Length: 560
Image (cartoon, rainbow, N blue to C red; front, side, top):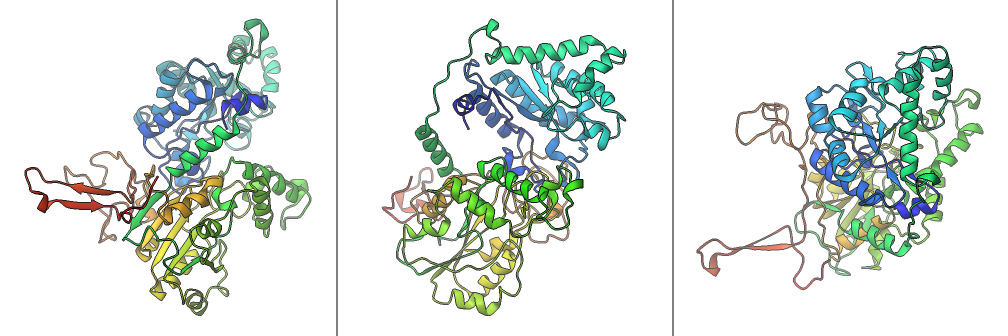
C-alpha cells in the first residue's frame, strides 16, 4: 500500500517497515522481514521509508520502523521471547537498519519490540530508547508501543503490579504513545497528581506527538496538510507485477527447466496447486478478513474447546480451527476474483496439463498411498509438485505472527508425497510457496528442479507458470540462508571468523554428524537463472571458449 492509498483512506501513520534481522527460520515472522543481513535490511528499509514519506516528507504519511530491538533474535525462535544479544551485536548489527533509516530517510517514528534484553523488558529499557536510540543514533521523533506491549509489564514480565506503575516505567524509558487503545497511559494523570511521575515527562511525550501530527498536516495552525495525488491502481498493479517477476528463486535445476509448451505430458500434484490463499502472508487483505472470520467463530462458540466467556485475544492466534480453511479460500477468491491458481497458470501454456489432488497441509495417511501416487502419474512425462505452507494469523497456519515452529519443514504429508513421487522415477519439478527458509534437503535431493515462490500474492501463480515454461527468466536471490538441518541454526551470511562456521582463511569446527557438507543447503544470495554465459580465457583462441549456464533456455526463447 502506498502513501497515496493511506491518505485516500484518511491515514497518516504506516506501522511499517519491519526492520528486524531474521536469522532463525523457526520464528513465524520471517516472511515480514527483509532477511538476515544488516546491510540488505538497511537498504530496503531506507527505500521503503523514502517512498512512504517522500524525499522531503511531502506525502503526509509517516513510516514506523519496527521493532526496536532484536525482536527476531528471540530464544528458540519463539515470538516475544527473551533476546540474548551483547551490546556490540545490538548496536553494530541489529540497530544498523535504524541508524541508516534515521540519517538517510528521516525515519521519525519507531515502535518497540515485545522482547526483553538482558533481563529488562524493551518497553522499560532507558538505555535502549534514551541512550542508544535518541542518543547514539540521533533519533528525535516519536516512539510508539507495539500493541498491548505495556500491559505485558503487569501480565507477563511482572515488573509492575498496577497499570499506573507500568505507565511510569514505559514513559520514563522513552515510550511516548500507548497503542492501540491507551488504557495504560490513562493512568498518567493519577501518577502525576500523586507525585510518582514528574509532569515534564508527560510534556515531553506530548511535544513529540504534536510534532508528528504537525508534520503530516493534522494541526492547521502549523501549515496546510500535504496535497497528495489520488492513488493510481494501474501504476500500483504494474509495480506489483514487476516486483513479482524479479522475486522467484530458482534453487536448483539439472536442465529439466524450462519446459517446452505442449511438448510433454505434465501432471500437477500437491496441496498448493489449486489454492489461492497460500500465496498471501499475514498483514495482507486476506489475513485481515480472516481475523474477522476467526474472531466471530470464537466468540460465537463455534470452535471446540474454547469458552467465549473466558477467551483472551491471543486465543485467536493459538487455537486450531478445524474446517475453517474453505472459508479462508472463499474469502481470498472474493477479494481477488481475477486471480488464477497454479494449475490454471500452467494451462495457459499447455491445455493438456492434468491436475491430480494429492497431498495436504494436514496429514491424511489413508489418502496418500504408494498405489494412488503411482497411478496418478503413470502416464506423465514430467511431474510438477506444488507444495508449501500457509502463513497467517489464525487457523491451521505454520507461519505468521505467534506461529513459531520447532521444525520448519513442509507440513502435513507433503514430505511423504515427495518420497512416493521420487519412487516412481518420473522427472520431478518442485515448487515451494513459502516466505521463510524451510528444511528442504530431502526435497532438493528428490527434485530435478526446485523453485521458491515467496508469497507473491495475486501474482504468485502467474509467475510460477511463466517461470516453469520459460517465459520469465528467474532472477531472485535468497535474502536468508536455508539450513540443511535445524541444528545448524543460527547459520547466516556475515558470520564472524572463529564462530565455528566455514571460512576460507582459516581452520574451523564442524558438525561430525553432517559428513557430506556442514554448510548451508542454499546460501544467502543464492539463485539460478536460465541465462547462458560464454567465458573466454585470456589469450586463448575461440576454439577453447566454454559456455557456462544455469541450465539455460532453448535458443530463441524470449525471456523477460
